[in-house]
Image 1: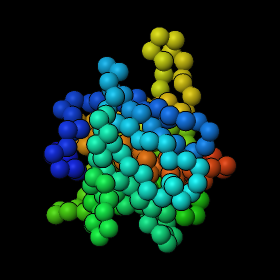
Image 2: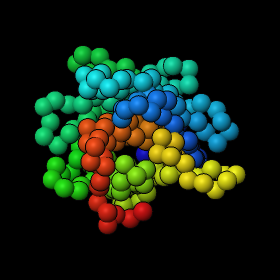
Image 3: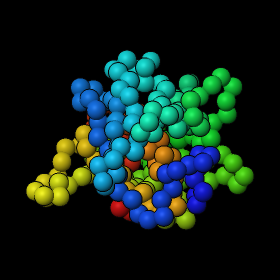
Image 4: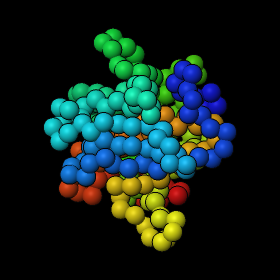
Length: 205
């Protein structure tokens, strides 16, 4: 993904980029987010979308200026918790540009991401989003993005799970990566109360 998933994407970086992701409200799973770069500049934001599951079926990722970059929407009915991603603000009849689904609904599982296009692409997300420790792999099993616990640079203390790091490898679309974070947060919210989504513990980390 050297040119980015989104048209005119400004979020494909030439160097490995570390973003800080912070929940904007902590009272329930599925809240808003703010995302900052290493200089403290706002990169992405997601407005809080509340505790009502009906409010959480569609989530919009925006840039720092409030422009809609992509929309993720839960596909219903869906046995494997399938989500679809749309460029910009979704409109009726618009075709998705990617989909995300659990590889299994029984026990621990990985998450499969299918990008539509010619040719299409497939990614696997392995690890534990509930523990803020998971990796996005491409079809060649190369890491393209990682979600990690954030460590305070001055005190070397591991911060709470409401603040975490998103490491994006060169050439991977940062907006797409953050869209996948939103889906993982939604799946984790659906499982709230039983430690969230636990994916393949044998995965590479």
